[in-house]
Image (cartoon, one colour):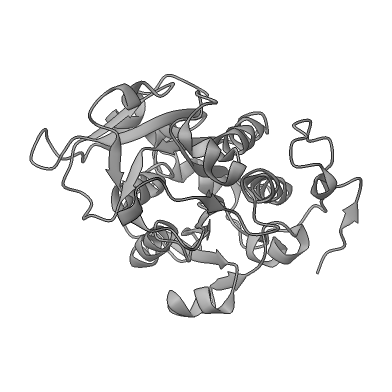
Length: 308
């Protein structure tokens, strides 16, 4: 494992310190499996990666972090199903999560708050899809029959600052060090409003920290796609018209939700088109049965004009 030099760490920041001055100094990690630049140029002609059935050496290696989650597991599965185009990898936090998605050798275990533990999963990748997120837990004792609202908390060490900011920053830094060609980051709508109710859950300010990581990625110099998803639903994908927007405008409409399977598909489609790079957008869908199911993702990405 490559040596890691540590300078004053972001892990020591106070929970409400927004300066983010600490950082890790990462080694330049080799990527022996990456195709030559001439091959990459050929595959990217006309703004799109080459279609058809590429050889194993041409398939891009894509790491999905948060692969044990409800959306991340869908992305990982979709990549596995497209083995002619992608060599899928997953990163999960525990062995239990690894077994939940099949326990294959291409699923790594690591803690995104610890840079060194995730380096083996990142070496040699061409693209990174970030689907990690802090998850609030409901405090015990809530009785809906008594009225009122449930209270939430984050476990020690798993606050949004540590997961959605430091953890995502670690992933971006490590991916940049190996020369990754694109990072897709899935966030959430609502980040333009500091008073959004999601920020009050467990006093975590989760959207604040997510937005901070998004800005860090946008300023990193690495080609990126930032997807701010609406309310996630466990429904079938591919049967709704998808909508893109900016600055939480979609939250002012009746179309504020999206199926996890559709978010997963957009993540993968973002790897196919130049029109998806250096862009950030909100994502939702029309209700099932209205509109036309989205199939033309190049046109969808072309509608987006905002870099952040």
